Image (cartoon, rainbow, N blue to C red; front, side, top):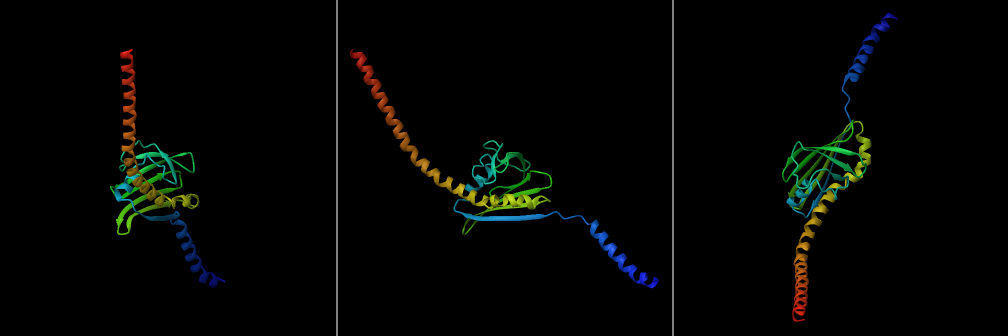
Length: 206
């Protein structure tokens, strides 16, 4: 009997040591990284202007509005509030990194138990301008949050490209329409002046 315990004791001690070592290891939080890319006919400057205009979120599938004033250029360290299209509760967004014409990286400070980093990247290629939208989620809530936001996150890069292209084609139309409107306004003004002069001459002769 003593010989049996003598033989088994080293095995039990080594197994206990391995279990203790595993229990003492820091638990790794779930990490999720996803990137979506599209190619656009819009230029780098046009797409970058859309990305940097944080006051206009009309094209964004996830964000409805922000408290960023029009004309403010985002810089590292900027913290602003945004309202998601999925919830009326405001969230805070921290601008981490800005590379003009290339990259914008922000961190979303939404809820405890979740770390979210979003990166917009724009690159000129032979096939057109490449727009990428990357999402990094870390935390024990990341699988749940991703299951809700993934269908919307998959559309961000595409909607950004479409918004820039639409604005690109709408601007020449507006410029072409302006002369016709000015000509019409001038014609109305001339008719009004003619009527005023006729009335004035009628009063003079009467």
